[in-house]
Length: 274
Image 1 (tube, rainbow, N blue to C red):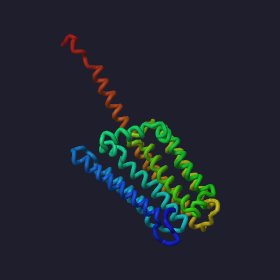
Image 2 (image 1 turned 135 degrees about the horizontal axis):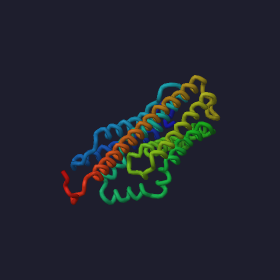
Image 3 (image 1 turned 90 degrees about the vertical axis):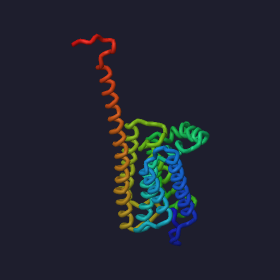
Image 4 (image 1 turned 30 degrees about the vertical axis):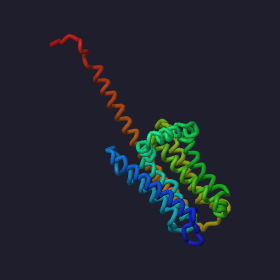
């Protein structure tokens, strides 16, 4: 949706998106290097996740995807709305920002992260509704056709897909210091969004978005890509949640074992008996 398909060349918006992604990646690398120079630990794997996410955003903006028009659009949607957000979130950019900013910038960022509006947006059920609900609005109303006729509307739709995807992935993974929510509500958000995504992709087998006329083969290929590609990303999100549950359970068990050992230890004033 960002490309100027008729000209076959990336448009101004695509260049802006790619430029912003590259600048963000440079800022991330500079901050990570700054942490390491002062002796702080920052795993290189997080650099790789963030670089991969930025590369996917750039590729989605600049390069056309193979397949029919709707299949290519769906591949771009998966890349920028699901794959790139997961990779970027695994890089923990907010954690890096909080550790690398000067005290004043850190306080301002914390104030934003603890603000009431952000607390509402980071509720897993709200994030899931924004992510999956936006897709239903795009594909099951005339919005998709209108977005292709009006470039400014296409820009807004593309921005929403990317931002909603990043918000949803960040809330479900809960790796950065956003407002915390329990494992149950995060899992419910993931399952709910996955179900909505799956049902929507099935409806696209039967009917194209209103106001459009894609070939049957193109439509079914796009629907399959949305169905199976979305499942793969959602499984990856579930793996992240499962690993966190496993780690949290291990820490809780270790605390209980230490507490039990302390309770069983005889008091220092107790008489020694042979």
